[in-house]
Length: 494
Ligand code: BES
Ligand code: MN
Ligand code: ZN
Figure 1: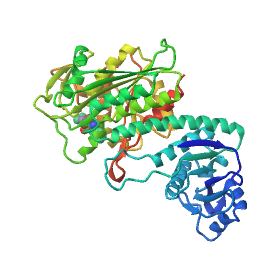
Figure 2 (figure 1 turned 45 degrees about the horizontal axis):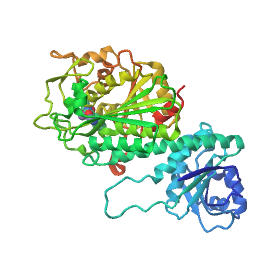
Figure 3 (figure 1 turned 180 degrees about the vertical axis):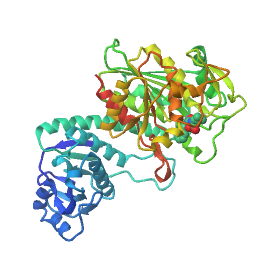
Figure 4 (figure 1 turned 45 degrees about the vertical axis):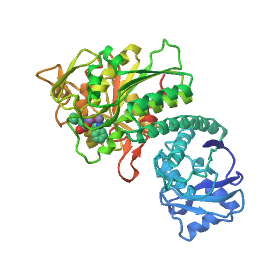
């Protein structure tokens, strides 16, 4: 997809399809007004006949027009004063859905010609790229029939009011394209079934990424190397499977090496059966998405590489399967983490924290500025926040605030949740330094508290993306979150 910014008026710009809006009560937007003069008042007539009321989400296609554009999509935008970034995204998504049923190869949106309170030209452009990319994304499915046709649309333009806005919008398009490239990579990896996307597959995907981008360095540690490093906790999770585990490390230096890197740690459980603490069968297929944290690290690295951000970023991905088997870790087994601390594994289904703790310890060798881990860590987080916001936990309030703000700007929100000694007490064990589970109450918080035991002296944050990284039901699939949040954070990092 090619994106461009235009300062031409809708009455002049040639395009296969112009996209304009009408507010509540049939009030034409500036662009609709201008265009209508060239197409014989068709939009005003539409409103007058009662075919378009301006309700948010409505969309009508006018085809077979003569003039600068062959088609016009007229969108209902709702109340003028309530038309903000959220409504802008929704309106554009309706337009794309109409567009996808036409043969239009290019389109220009004029929705931004009226001011949008919480979206300047930069934010509009970034959001537009995301909406277009979302409408064009295709799951790398394994269907042999009924393949969805390739979209006709290959070029998308955004109209802006002034030259100053043009520069901003172009910057937004660039950043948006980096973000959606990263999201697509994340989604492609996470959508693969677990018999395709194994730890070995992820390791190969990492090496392929390094082939595509010279500035990326990738190293993959095998189980023997992890053992030598003392990663007893990580390795305890992979005991039951035939699939070899892989510990993947990405390094990108966009700034002098002396600048401390941001380390992103992603949970890469390519399938989570629960192990000996076997999960119930319902929806167990969705545990192929248990490597979404890992996939978000891949996606964010890709965005950083596309955008050549002037910072240093390291990605650390412990990848393995969690399976029951003759050699599996059993409830009550005690393992020694790379930090030296011992853990009583009371529930083998609380495996994410067991692999992350060693990855966090490993990340210390990079003398990181911050460590951020991403993980589909707990069902409890989905109970607490649903599927709209990710859970955000940190031992550093400034870092938490920066990530929360990034999530808001990126429309990929997170909610700051507490951690603390009173919760961590629930992890006590009679047999080891602590246990890996702490009962049902506050499950997302106690999981974060477990991780915090490995973050002494680090500026650390944890995003529990169990509810946000993928969708269930009819639209089952990876969402690409939290790539937008992470890339926004990195773009704005000083
Ligand atoms: N991968 C799951 C968490 C999960 C559950 C993600 C549902 C998405 C949807 C994780 O490994 C897990 O099993 N967590 C347990 C922890 C419990 C045993 C303390 C959970 O949430 O039930
Ligand atoms: Mn589990
Ligand atoms: Zn899991």
